[in-house]
View 1 (cartoon, rainbow, N blue to C red):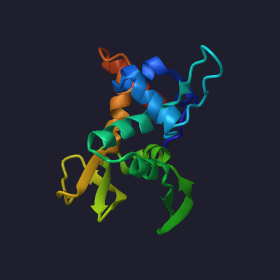
View 2: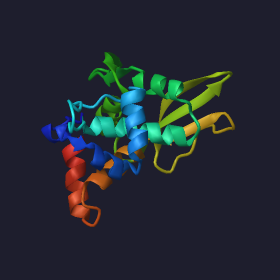
View 3: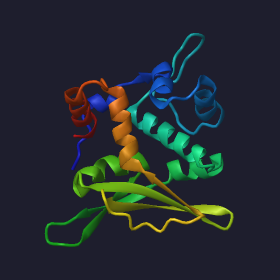
Length: 186
């Protein structure tokens, strides 16, 4: 199981978040302050105060950007990022044990170690009449067994995590990237 190290608590200022996610100041302000989609770990207090964001915040902001890019409305995005997932742990004697409800980020981080590096976590969103239904699918890297149609959206959650880690680490150093990966997802 991946234990989230203390380094995962590293905080990022808005200017870094905008740089890593390639979004402008207005979009970040709108998603955080106007719509309340993501709550900074430390909220700006008073004039000149700065919001501080966690790696988890970055993940959700990257997911919001991705979903908006596919035309998903903000109400549906809120439902997706606020959904709670009941995890399952494999018992030694076989079978599964339910764990507490966790958010999408924690689900990806915790179960990443259980599924191994050869598998990807995919968020599949299907439009059903006027609403969306989402589910998480585990695939091998080269596997493509998802039904993709006109009313279906597929987002690789593992790729979002890896992309963020690459942005945070020195992109010119593979060694630094591996160190950052271990820091955030060990």
